[in-house]
Figure (cartoon, rainbow, N blue to C red):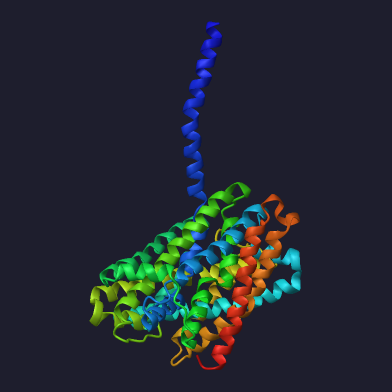
Amino acid sequence: MADNNQTQTTDTNTTTTAQPLSRKAKFLAILGAMGPGILTSFAGNDAGGIATYSTTGASYGYGMLWTIPLMCLLLIVVQETAARMGCATGKGFASLIRERFGVRVSAIAMLSLIVSNFAVSLSEFAGIASGMQLFGVPLQVSVPVTAAACWMLTMGGSYHRIEKILLSISAIFLTYIISAFMAKPDWGAALQATFVPTISNDLNYVSLFVANIGTTISPYMIFMVSSNVVEKNLDASGIPAQRADNTSGAIAAELVSWFIILTTGTVLYPEGVQVNTAADAAKALVPFAGENASILFAIGLVGASFLAACVLPGITASAVCEAFGWERGPDRTWQEAPAYRGIITAMIILSAVVVLVPDIDLFGIMMVAQVINGVILPILLVCMVIIASSHFIMGKYANGRVWNFLTWFIIILVTVLTAIMFVLQLMGY
């Protein structure tokens, strides 16, 4: 009896002490799996996104803050689905497209992605150049140095190391929150505008609304989330962590967008100051919010553009190599993955060279990227929902009815907004 009691006591003690360790291990596992969703969300707040949000605040004050919760929901649905696909199948989105829809569809999607991402990459280098010029650094210096830094970081040799560095760079977005507080906004009015929509039939208002949605969800985001999940060797057990990662990432990124609109809406809108770029917004803040707020805004622009400039070549190369079954990954050598490293190198060098060309029409290039994104995004979203809804591919992790409804709602919304965007562009808005 004594032995039995001793055994029972030992078992009870073991159970009691093991429980906290189990919870700790589970918590650490969740933290270890996090990163892809946060990084992708912040990469979306690039030079083009900051310019769009700055223009929104300067043009309509707090009037479009209500779009932020909507965009946050859309971003969560898309990124969670992409991450779940990667975890459930162990394959990135490009591989799943090839297997489900064939090589031809995959090749067309990859070609469109290359053109689109290259155009967006140009805008990132342009954003860095314009931001650094506010500090007196000529683009002939800032662009080559940035290109070299992006190349060395992307070729860093370890996905986990690169991810940690890029996540650290994401802290630069805090500058927008600080600059918003320095602007001394009307918090009550801002919160009311966030939860009480203001609808307008002004075509410029509609155009900016379309731009806000378009800059929130980009085609490369779907590939980036799923590819990063695969790079981290996550499986179905990582789905809860990825859900937390993508939800928290979307909320954090959209909070930054909210503060950008808040800052320009507080400072520039009452003065009637109109801006077309993020650099314009940073310069315009000086006489109204002070030089410190302007500096913080410019630092945020440079950091955000650098983050996206580092991400885009890698995700483009990864998607293309994945689609055609080529070796990929920052831990692969030139001999092992020539296409992967070659695409990254070519994309960075060409982006830097084009931005250095005198009198280049960067705005026109960005418009081409927007058109391409507008065309391929609904198509990619349809591919995504078909794959994510398939029990044959996803097993028990396939979309449920609610998630299917939300995804199709996004597809219809994006398609309608894309059509509106084309019409507005033809009308000159």
